[in-house]
Length: 279
Image 1 (cartoon, rainbow, N blue to C red):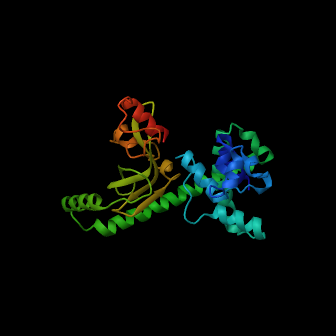
Image 2 (image 1 turned 90 degrees about the horizontal axis):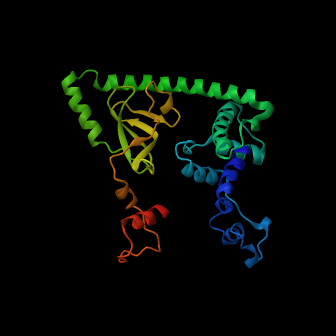
Image 3 (image 1 turned 60 degrees about the vertical axis):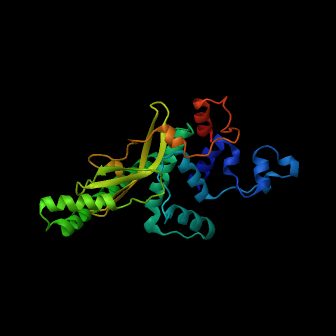
């Protein structure tokens, strides 16, 4: 419940309308300060649920909180406990640790500070430490399995032929991810070329397009690492990666601002670029 409220608090800190159900026009009117036009009262406003709040915040805080997985114990626990008083004890610590990781980032964004935890600070620290240790154990298991798969597939091939086969495999395999771009990186398990996938953005200070990795995949050994695991590697892969993409080309993928008309000769290139950024 605290995670949901803090997610919404962060959105409200940007604008109250960001927690409103986008399909409910009356609620949008109220959130933008025009509820009186249709006599909308506060009690009638429909807001988003935990899942949508998480999705919206994750898009804004790219790389700071993990993307929502397909199977999401946090939502299951919240809905099960809140609606019918049910919970699975085996999942409690995992859910708490997930919540704490998200909440800590939100506290930083909202400038609330660590005093939020009060008497539970020691429990907070213990769960974080246990979560990191458990993540390291899972990571080592993934690396061990990936090395075994690689040895089974390619261990019988001589070195020169193996290099040719691996080059072919990594070139013809399409990463496939919801993000915009990908970047190659050495696999921490088998040293083949794998793929970092995530979301792209423009670093305005350096004026370069960067990739914020969320996932690493190696198709040679089937290794798949998630956000959080990338930073636990001996050679971390979680940092932003510069892409060989011009910012102008990146912005050209988006529709320009409605006020911009392509036939207006008075708008120079900088103005056109600004219209893309605003969009």
